[in-house]
Length: 517
Image 1 (cartoon, rainbow, N blue to C red):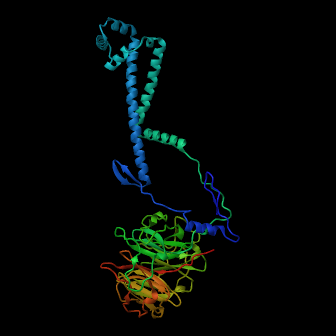
Image 2 (image 1 turned 30 degrees about the horizontal axis):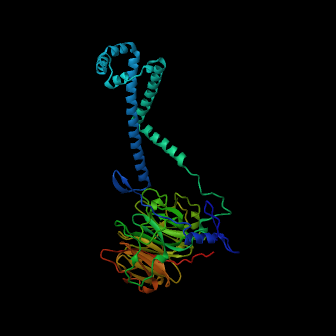
Image 3 (image 1 turned 90 degrees about the vertical axis):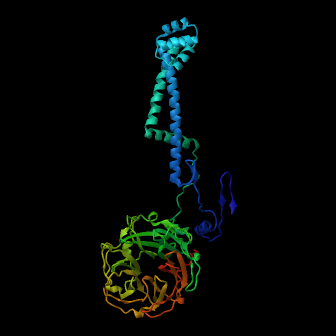
């Protein structure tokens, strides 16, 4: 490292042979303060009271301050001009009747007598007559009279302009704009950052570390991603750590794991799909609130997040299967979503009084298991579904009884078991063999005898899961600690819940290796 600074800071890094410059730059961004962020508390006195404001409020307060300053200054200048114009009007009366004024003044005994006689003869004020009596003789010449007339005409124009500013809010604001432009020209500094053409193709992935993260979305619609390392592993039945702050009765409703270089597909309850890079989602700590989803995605009115899927790329050998609350399922080729737009695209047409509740990736030959809120389930082959276009409705997946609704669905994977958790914190793992294959659109069989289902996952013995409660508690626990038991049993305790608390979701934790390039 060599310091070549003069009046400007310049540090040169010379790399050894074989080193990749972008990797070094990536590490500098990560391990040094070459790139850093900081917070600023905008605290100021607003109407004599301290107030913490945002940028917009600060600008509004400044404009209101400038408006008051310009208004009061203009009013003062108007009073001053009107006072001068009043004196000049007296001069004009005196000069028009100069001989009579001189005669009255010469015939008066003193200044007070002259003032009284002049005011009795002409409509002039005390200030005007005093100014007239103070006139010097040279000011009675023709040249001086022309100067008085010219000054009066100019004053009347100024008075007209000042009155227009006070009477017209638009003109008052234009004065503020003009003064700010003068300040800008006087104190402006040239850009110090140089914009150069990139050498070769530049990608954001070149300067962003690929690491595992956990994405959470709250019921109120706040989203963030947090590094997996922020959560420590615990044994089954633990109390857990704070997984996200409980802000004003808000709680985590969606939990997902991904890598920072992946794509995240956001499926809305109305069937619309948005696609973003994971690193474009705001990062936050375990207890931070995050940012509103509406500020991350260009969502439409009344849209609500239903599911998220992580994909490396949009390949044609994978499929998306979606399921609605009323049991409608649909399969679409993943490549159909390759040409996504910032404003979202249609993923499935939704019936009235129905909502999209889950979506997952399949290979075209998988088997699917649908789990309902009341603990029913149905297992059928994916081949029972044909590929449909994005803007289609789908077909029936399960026949629901009474007021039951679909909670989620899972893809049957080799060497996995089905983990089901109830809202009461009870859960279990069951072999998929106990869920017999049925035809699509049947009523299904019992999956768990417990409280209402909070979530279900297809898991391996070596997996870890993250469980989130309504109050914001999080437990990260190994799957191997959860016993494999029968399909119709209640299960074991997965998490100790506080009074009136309940389990709202669970997700698989996936460790992602960091790219060393």
